[in-house]
Image 1 (cartoon, rainbow, N blue to C red):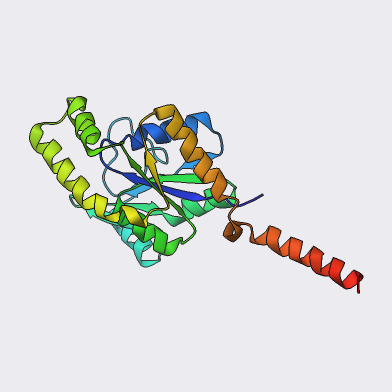
Image 2: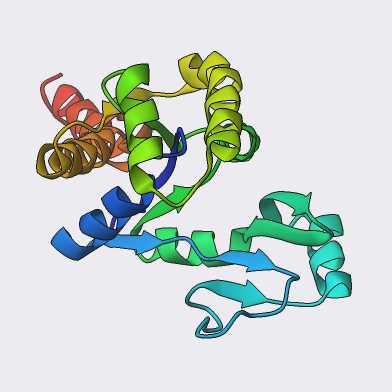
Length: 210
């Protein structure tokens, strides 16, 4: 059984990342969503190990000190992060793990897991991004302006990603992401065992012909 690939998905607010991940895991059975860990209390309806792993601050800080977090950050007095053990367990079981996270966290993970796949999701244009944010109808103009300002900062890190995914057609975008992940399984860096086996057989043929 081949090891799974950790795929980190980032993108602008309003790009449709959450919808893409839900459709990806619905349409294909080889994906596992990474579950984050947090120190904030569970909200109504949230389940342990589904929405989050809920722990207290002491446990979270010990995990940081022991190098058990792939990335983490503190927001409004609470820690949020990606536990290394859960991700590694899924990968070792052959599952392709999907993790949605912002750019800074994605780059942290890239340093710890160099062979992870980084995908950046964007609408086809900045104008479409603004239209989608306004079309939600759930945020005022001030919040939308802050999200667009944040998008300006995020756009400076796009070059660090392996692929840009343009979310214009949902069905096509889901197929593209799946193809990118599956194609990544066939890169030489992820086929070391096969390469070693082929070389060994070829060396055997060569010696037999001498």
